[in-house]
Amino acid sequence: KFPFTKNKKQQTTKPLGLDHNHLPKHVAIIMDGNGRWAKNRGMPRIAGHKEGMGVVKKIVRHASDLGVKVLTLYAFSTENWKRPKKEVDFLMKLPVEFLNTYLPELIERNVQVQTIGDFTVLPPHTQKAVKEAMSKTKDNDGLILNFALNYGSRFEMVNAVKQIAAEVEQGDIRVSDIDEKLFSRHLYTSELLEPDLLIRTSGEQRLSNFLLWQLAYAEFWFTEVYWPDFDESLFEKALFDYQNRKRRYGGV
Ligand SMILES: CCc1cc(N2CCCCCC2)n2ncc(-c3ccc(F)cc3)c2n1
Image (cartoon, rainbow, N blue to C red; front, side, top):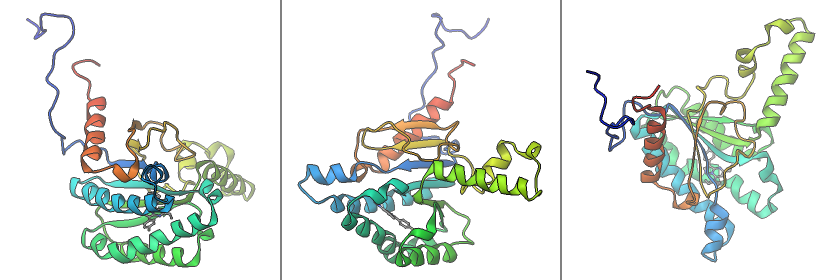
């Protein structure tokens, strides 16, 4: 007799906790809501960014402890240059401050710092701090902590098209060689696994020109919570929901 339950719908027990053996390998996060968080408290926007940086440290620790392989954080988009100069100057100091206080722990945790985005237009002090972190952690094989800095997905994709067109023009490749794999290899993320899960805070349900090609098959998880109020338990809830979406309860 088939093990069917009385009623048509398959009844299966839903796991209670996180299955540490089936975590998403690559989690991407749009850390949104820092300005609104500050505004609601009558504080300047930069206070929200500052608070948000503390949450980055907490979530990096937790992702590293859980065994997530890659964590990509949208820290600065190409659109963010339109913010007031004072705010942009503040934001451009955050990588320096973050690494001054946290690089030793990242090294101890075997974290490898990487970046995606058009790096060369960042201020020299920002570039210097991030380059130092990348070189000091390049041999680590723990969590890959990947910061999207001055990143824009459409710029990245047009850039790839230009590179590929130039390779065809030079005769390095033929048009018939161009396929999805070759295109992916011309993106900033060429060495990375594609994201399995995208998390976005503050209730916005948009991609905002983030990893448009790479997120083609990712699960999207949204929360109303502003990034400064995001924490380890919400992070685990996103991973738990991801696991329960990927599982099919008896169905195909
Ligand atoms: C360049 C703008 C920016 C903004 C920012 N925010 C503000 C916006 C989102 C909330 C988080 C705090 N963070 N937080 C960490 C970094 C960081 C970047 C590179 C690196 F190597 C180490 C740390 C960061 N960078």
